Amino acid sequence: MLKTRVGMEAEISSDWTGEPAILEGAIVIGAGAAGLAAAHALIEAGIATEILEREGRLAEPWHHRHENLHLNTHRDLSTLPGVSFPKGTPAFPHRSAVIRLFNDFAATHRLPIAFGVIVREIAFRGDHWLVKTTIGSRAARHVVVATGRDRHPFIPNWKGMEEFSGRIIHSADFGRATDYAGKRVLVVGAGNSGFDALNHLSGVETGQMWLSARNGPSLLPKRIGKIAVHRFSPLMARLPVGLADAVMAATQRLAFGDLKKFGLPRAPSGGASRLGSDYTAIAADDGAVDAIKAGRIIVVPQVKEFRHDSVILDNGQAISPDVVIAATGYRTGLETMVGSLGVLDAKGVPLFNGAAGDPKLPGLWFTGMRPSIRGCFANARIQGAAIAGKVAGRKR
Image (cartoon, rainbow, N blue to C red; front, top):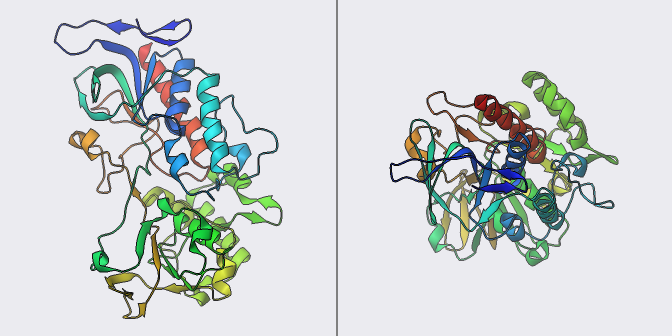
């Protein structure tokens, strides 16, 4: 019998096929916010649950992200069930507070996490799932994939980048803002990660900065006066998509004016629409727009190619940054794990998420794979509870 919490034992079915015994419950893959929230909800619903985590500790990506990193979501809307940030935590918690929250949550609920377990592949066996890992195979009626949409940093294969004499890094490896003092910096990408980097750089005496923008951003201020804009996210999430688009566009225009005058292209669609269509998160401004208006950051076209000492833009212009920060997104890296199941789109994003599923593949769930107006923590709670409700309903 498998212990999932004191007083709760898993139901395990025997089989004689040479495969592992079947857990009459769920295996959760990934112990980030989405995985922890889903596991907690499953256990609360009486579902025997195992959590498999590839890293050796919780919140590993948060340990490695840059020192200046803070949440763009408000602390009161970024909690996990039964655990909140301590009194005195800033409105937008530092990454160290997020790491502490994860560990407090796992300890408070005594979650059964197996660390250092890499899942290689998930296979469907008709009435259960076979999970192939680095420590052997597991089997369960349900599998919840919560490995994150930001698992693998993605940098385009620009022509000539190998010969560039400067540095090319992904925004995930931003490091300390002070390391860029006196340096000329090109940020490629006007999304959430790009503006996060520029927000930090705007407080440092850098050399000239450039922002290469293919599309204009869906951009909101972090605060209006002393009010955190993210506090309105639960209300925004209830609005029809078209109305939410209009409210965000009006807020952006009122807060920043017409940013096209400073070279930023028009966004291809509204902020709420892009969350659903191409999974583009809404960017938050905390100083970058002022730097753009002051000329410290110059908006330029897309990158065409690299040369030894310069970057050539689509309009033929050459600029000479010391550092290029590729805020060019992430990939899920799920192709090896579930690619044979036909559940991924062209970008490797699951075709369904949360309580939605494929009737041909019963018991397979994904959570935390798409951005949300509410933010990842609130979304993790909502999706985890919804998945647990579906799994519990199937057991009856």
